[in-house]
Length: 150
Image (cartoon, rainbow, N blue to C red; front, side, top):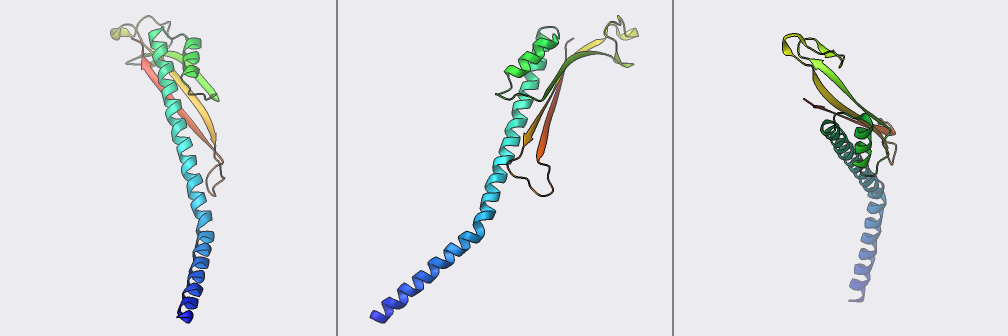
């Protein structure tokens, strides 16, 4: 009976050492996976925040006749705490037959007045937590929204 207990305890110690060794080998891969998921989540969240901000800016422009400063301010307000790298807001006019024209043009031929559009473009750089081989250290998230005024 004593011999059987000794064999059981020796065997149990041997298995615990194997589990620790397996954990030591697998732990770096598990941590890399966790950090990768966190980086992906940060990129995804940034994409959603940037898309929401450009939509708010362009909607504000349509509601208040394309005031560029107001569109930029509205974009910053809806930015979910981000300080965007660049915000480009503006308006442009387009004729269906000739494309983009000067907004001072009064007519587009048979089509009448040119169509007026507001646009907002935002760029935000996201620095990854870990530099992955083959991937850049910084990923740029860019979104553009264009909405017709009339």
